[in-house]
Length: 316
Image (cartoon, rainbow, N blue to C red; front, top):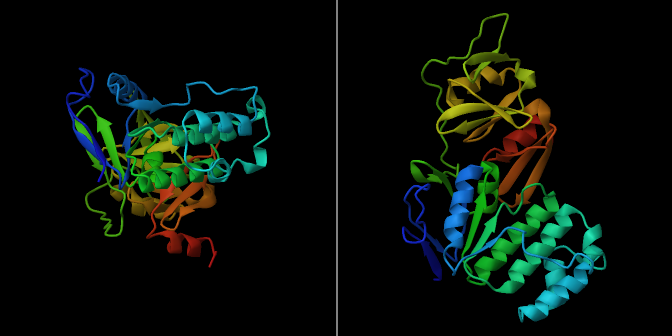
């Protein structure tokens, strides 16, 4: 088993909590954190000459075609995987003769993925690899992680989106001031409770959801809300990627929102079903819901809930 250990010597940064993490070649590992802490972590990792951060910053040859770029790096890295296989693996066969400066952001990202894969570097550390890309590119990245595991190359993915952390990894962690904590991914034994009293304001004729913004309390109508996410045990309303803190947990508000078309799709998420535009199947056991808002948010759908939600939308 090949593994790499991030320890106190590597993570020697006064702005980061002390933690240790061992990454082996049997799992893809992700660390979710806010942007500021992620930047500090990247700085710490770059100080170790054994670690290369893949963040789409190093150059490609923009005036050359995709095919020419891949051929150059294939030879440069002495990659043993045949070039045609690389082109297909990264879903680039239909645009192989397109100059890079005419490619979409998602196509460019797949070229970067191909370059990183051909480099043979280990361990492999990716920074925000699937931020702002299409479904095909996300699936391509997932396929590449599987190939890295087969090749015995430990992989770490750094993200600032919890859904991305759970989507691309077998083992997900959250990094915050208190340290490194495991994020639950497997919900097979999930048990929801509705104990305690909710702070949500409700009566027979009026229902508003209160959330805090600085020293103000704002009241939202349920249809305004895209979804609700659990962060550090507290519920956060999400409306077009803006978040608002609530004085309640998901368990406390789940039942009260059910009659308004909200659904507990995952341990950490309640979604407004009226805003679900698409059910995405990433793999046999990995699913997401795409929300119809300005940024087309995607949130996790537990594999234990896929049949239930299909029935709700009369898909079966």
